[in-house]
Length: 631
Ligand code: ATP
Ligand code: MG
Image 1 (cartoon, rainbow, N blue to C red):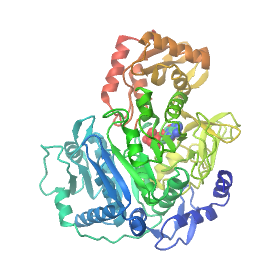
Image 2 (image 1 turned 135 degrees about the horizontal axis):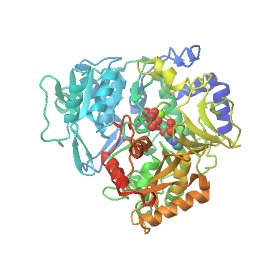
Image 3 (image 1 turned 180 degrees about the vertical axis):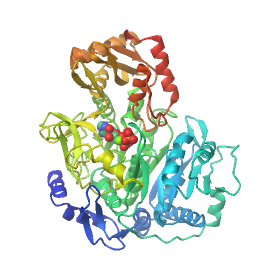
Image 4 (image 1 turned 60 degrees about the vertical axis):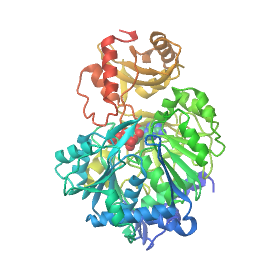
């Protein structure tokens, strides 16, 4: 069956379609009803079925592929690589589950995991899943305040942390951050389980509260912990959104629907099956990390690479050498990651034997054409842009090379994934936009399996944040989109990233794309600045490629010329600043609202998800210095 037929079935006969997909996983008790959509926007998939994520990801593979690698955890920070077979994974997860039970963690209890990309983070997640505890992984290295907010929202029975993370060779002790977060939190858990790699020699322990993983592991060496069979709609995990637009939301996922979505999408979108190797460069703390570093590849019996380190350390060839060494078939990264490499010499892409590599998937933010061309030409494999959100847990718009590769169209993440009934509608009238006409991307409920079931303990926020923007009951996370006659959709940025120049509404995204076509530019951010005459005018902040020949002034002139030629004089940037770094969230998304606030001296709102505070100082300095072009 080709894509068209497959997709058509998924939306026209969802129960038949998902009933068939459900066979991809093990059910202890089969579902009695495939879909209950009587209480939209809430819905339940595979009602009455019982299953377990850990069983599907681990136990199920022991007989056939116990000795095959399940997980390869590589750290170019500590220099340690661990190659973990399904059998070893099974043993470690059972030990970990034994520890959790020993600490009083049971079904339905929350466990906050605050760790970098290391094998024990995966053990911890799977051990929670095994006993029916709800994990909430918080990106390691988030500031104490962020962690405290998430603790108070999740009210965990246990917090699991690493002693430290590392970045670019620098140790970042986690324990002091945990201590500060627990001091601030209103609902601190009774225990902290510390997985120490011996990175923080001065680590302090709180007697009675803090317990040591290595010691407990030794006590639980031979534990066999039975799987908790959960009803398909029980919560499996919580994951907070990136916080690009405001206060993060606690996304709640189910068990059965998620398992089925992982089994199907890993095979048919990412083209990964049993015994094949997938390398996602994400962090376990993000949605991609949950789905395509942990659950997806393991549920299908593949090998997953987990990488701790910078893409440029020890040198910009590291990712490609790993592809060669482990015969990676599908790689998954982000445009931000690729733009980092783009600052380096293209020859780094050519040094490794990439004969096993079939696809590079990129997601998380818009993929600009110059970056897409650079990496496609450099690697010589198709680059597949895919669009989704923490909320959905798996791609919404993508191509599906595991089923049928439709042509890649530059600038578009492609076509709807199975089960997603997508529309582009006019934000004022709610009418469906014509082909080529810009509108807001929406989904007609019920959402397919795998997507969020609600916001943790806040059904109202689920309804208000996602389903209350239009007269009709439609899901939207408020991204602009445009669809062509073949159904390919382009994402034009978020609806709040729009500036109004003399009555013309311009997407900051479109201007950024245009700026980035100037060859010296590595990355650009555009915001609107108040202007007496025009209402708003575009202001550009841009970083240049390493070794770019152009001076800042020359580059700024080149950028302005590119925009004026491509988008017309109306979009002409009023000011251009060349900077060394742009402010981003921890997940690598541009934080335009922080730039806006600096330029206009307004309140930037919640900046707790900002990755590197120094990037804001960079911008402050540039503002003091004055623009490289304009006044
Ligand atoms: P918050 O919802 O807390 O403000 P966030 O939306 O940044 O944070 P995520 O769920 O990590 O949190 O990101 C999803 C968003 O990322 C999408 O709504 C979209 O704006 C953007 N995005 C993801 N993938 C793509 C893509 N391939 N092309 C364009 N935009 C993308
Ligand atoms: Mg969002």
